[in-house]
Length: 214
Ligand code: T5A
Image (cartoon, rainbow, N blue to C red; front, top):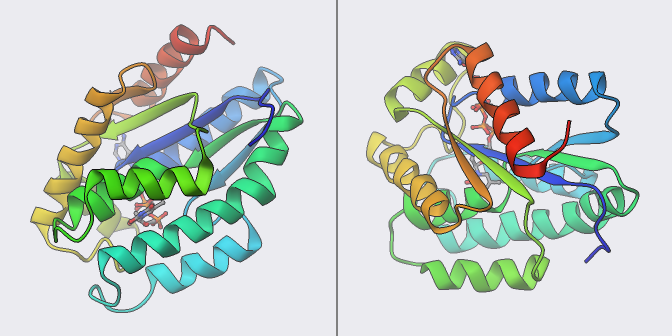
C-alpha cells in the first residue's frame, strides 16, 4: 500500500455508459489544468494484467463461472496495483482508471446472480488484493442497459460480457446503484443518458466539490 499522495479516481458503469468517452475528456481537462496524471483501465493496465484481460474477455459467455472470473480479475488487479497504480500515486501522480473493483462487485456479484459468491466473499478477496486501499472518488455512469448496449453495439461487436442477456445487465445496473448508496462519500452517480458535454460538466462539478481541487 502506498503512502498515497496522488488521487485515485475510477469511472464505473454498465456497457456503453460512456466511460472511455468521459475519460478522454477528463484527460484533456487535467492536462489543461497542469495536473500530472495517468490514465489506465481494468482489466489490464499493466503488461501482465493485459494478458489476463485477453483471457477474460474472449471466448464463449459461459467460459468461466463467477468464482473463476473473480479470481482472474483479482490477479490482474493485484498486478495493476503493485506495478502501476501504487507507484504512480506515491510519486504524486493522479491515476484515473476505466473500471476498478466496483465492476467486480457489480458484474461477478450482482450481474451473474448465480449465488456462487456473496458480497462478503468479494469483499474478502478485495481485502486480500488491495488491503484498505480504495479510490478517492468513483463516478458511476448510469444508463438504461438497453440504451447502453445499443451504443456499444453501434461501436463494435459485443465482447464476452456484453453478450450476456438483458437481465444480467439489469442486475448489474442495480448493483452499481446499490454500491453507490452504500458508499455515498466515495461514489457519485452521474446520469449518462444525456449529451457527452453535459455528462462531462456533471463530472467536473462533482470533482471540484468532492476533492476541492481544479
Ligand atoms: N469486468 C471488468 C468485470 O466483469 N469485472 C471486473 O472486475 C472488471 C474490471 C471490460 C469488461 O470487463 C468486465 C466489464 C466489461 O464487460 P471493456 O472492453 O473495457 O470491457 O468494455 P467497457 O468497460 O464496457 O467499455 P465500453 O467501451 O463498452 O463502454 P464505455 O467505455 O462505457 O463507452 P464508450 O465511451 O466507449 O461509448 C460507447 C459508444 O457510445 C457513444 C460513444 O461514442 C461510443 O460509440 N457515447 C455516447 N453516445 C451518446 N451520448 C453520450 N453521452 C455518449 N457517450 C458515449
